[in-house]
Length: 457
Image 1 (cartoon, rainbow, N blue to C red):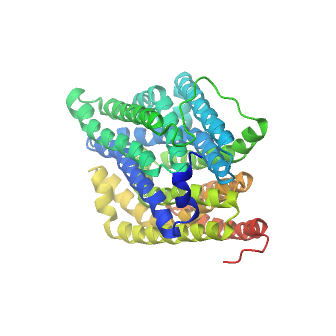
Image 2: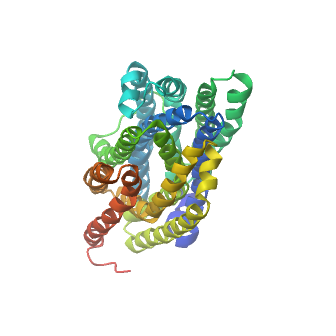
Image 3: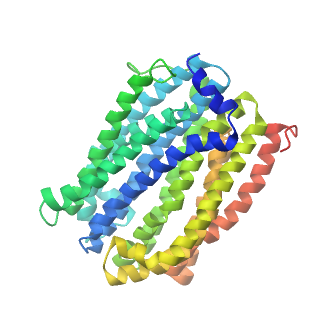
């Protein structure tokens, strides 16, 4: 079996150590990814132009759409592959991994083409004004139209590598791309391109960093071939309808969960832009700044998923639950620390992005309020990741629908109507408190179904 050298990690290693091995490299890569995502906003903010900042924040929504497509294949294919390995079915795991990568590449090309054809209406839908759409077009062209294929494909490759046990290699690719973007941002924005083209420079830097990550993963795939089930497919592999159904049953909900999250950001942008471009710039900075605990939490969840999925498939439910509990403790600790950090240094954090006085004033107030959502946000998406790992894609999708469609978005409209921008800012914590209660009621029912009352902790 090609997977023998990884079985101890999944089956026997102490839970805290196994979770650390899988999650720490992913957390580091998520933090570097966070830094390079924020670096565009930070460097653009050095211009003192809030319209450029608002434009880059608008395109972040499209970038998240690309992430949703990567989730379709990376989460759907990746969790299926590790479940197949847990049930000792390596042939199907290999075919599934090959199909997943090929499909991600095709969809990545199609997504870039669609964004090129419908660029203007898409940006208007996201809330671009006459003062921001020119900059938004520039950024979207390089980051998505030219770079979308590389982003989606490399993200899928990272998911697959992590789920078969190569967490460090998966994390290094993302981290390398992030550090490269940080280095290229000032080079293109302030050295190679003339004044007024800073947004183009930021877009080129992001595109090239995604290309570099893609090339790195190609090299890694060639190196691990023969040591695991991953390889670069020749042509478009076929998989059975049953396997495709299993992949899509988790992948589609995982993808739609990001789309729903993206939809919420669209609503936030639209409602915020109605209060003014400065308000839009401020909330855009806050949403990026608050991704510190969010990205760390995502790293913990991504490290948790293959461990939970493998033990679910092999029937070791006690270990499965212990891993889930350890991930919750770690994520909540990070969330509490982030609240302390943001409450203490909100003005310095916002001021680091842009020196414009009114934007800093608004952003400081927004961040001090939204930071209280951190622990509830973590518990919400940690539960979604758990359901994906245990092949409950439909449940994970329903949890996302409840959170975004029935709670977040309605609360945004109602609280905006009642309290204006303050209502928008406080929506996240208000909605997620309700969502966590609902999530754990559903979890109690699902866990009883899984263990059949046999595996009490």
